[in-house]
Image 1 (tube, rainbow, N blue to C red):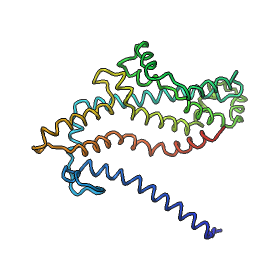
Image 2: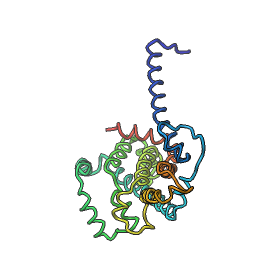
Image 3: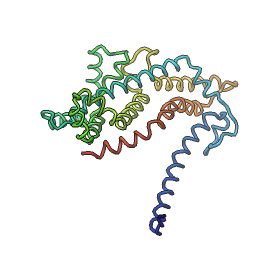
Image 4: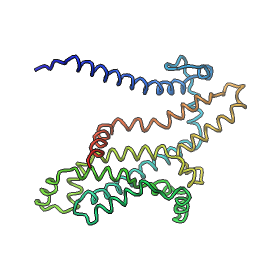
Length: 290
């Protein structure tokens, strides 16, 4: 039977679609502006107003960025950091959240409160630096992935998700003779794919965009991450503009900024659509369960 919408329902749908349309426009306009400026010549970039569709194309900004000698090394360092850091975080977070989700865990409330306490207090930058230095992690990738390997916030979200799984599934597996390790990998882990995708995406975006810890802990230029190198390219480009303003190699600093922005966010944009379904489901289920 076809449902006939009332006037109130039609008005509500109109408001919802209008709000979604405005949100889509406000999201796409800056992105189109970035893409257009990144491929526009200096005389177009220097004009005021929106540049949504490029009139002429000039890829000198991309050429300047992509021709930098350390860019691809930094890309590799960032990819390695993102993959390694995400894998470590997923492993430690899931293995820490699984026992916390069990009501039979001794002193479960105390351990949960102890983890929750770390969300309100931290040692600060200087103690963290001294700890990393004394552990001998300076100037290595471990200084970038180990200090923030476990997030209390993500740990509690995964715990809430796992505790919401039906206990009857584990009981049925125990009746069939499965032990705890088998239950973990054969029952709990496959059902936890949505929250694993959520935590993985959060962590991957964090590691991809992080730069401050690399600036503090990494002294070797060839070990720096992408964000640091892109900043250096921009500063070098601005310094050379006064020298090259009179010849044909002049590149607008705005075009370089936008080209670097596209280079930096493109991998994350390509990965996100494949994880969006699990990301939304894991965020909702893991956050509302008490």
